Amino acid sequence: MNKINVLFVCLGNICRSPMAEGIFKNIVKKEGLEKYFSIDSAGTSRYHIDEDPDHRATGTCAEKNIILNHKGREFVEKDLINQHVILAMDKDNLANIKKLITPEIERLESKSEIFLMRDFDSEHTGANVPDPYYGGQEGFYQVFDMLERSSYELLSYIRRKHSI
Ligand code: 4NP
Image (cartoon, rainbow, N blue to C red):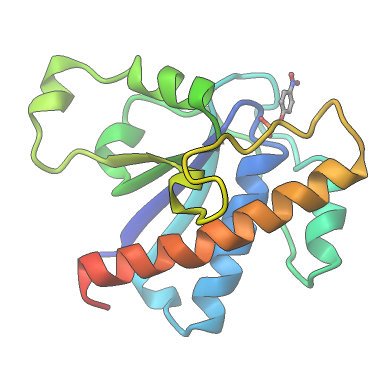
């Protein structure tokens, strides 16, 4: 069976989306579903290409025994073809992703499904995952909780859709 490619997207790819990648990977592993998935993250900017995640993102996840292992990369047009499910952290990221959709991609039946991450959060469905970069540690804890809640629901959605 081909893997289901899941991509989490934010602006810098050093805070929200690598946290989402790590949290979702952790849940998938706990459920014994790793063989079905390829999970990655990317940023709509080029600010932090090849950089490690922000130490606050790494630290927040480490407190929950989730190790982040990612180097910043840019979201590119090819992702709209190669990824099955794309999760934008906020509405600006979503708009930037959608700007890359060409008429050719639009016509493809196999194009990515694109959502806001918090479309899967039963608390404040469809809200932004706020950018914690310029704030304090508390913001990272709040982001973690939003991402964890959303990740469980996202996994349920994918399992239903792909019968796994
Ligand atoms: P992220 O946070 O999009 O969650 O990775 C940010 C990180 C860096 C910047 C903005 C947001 N920046 O402007 O450098």
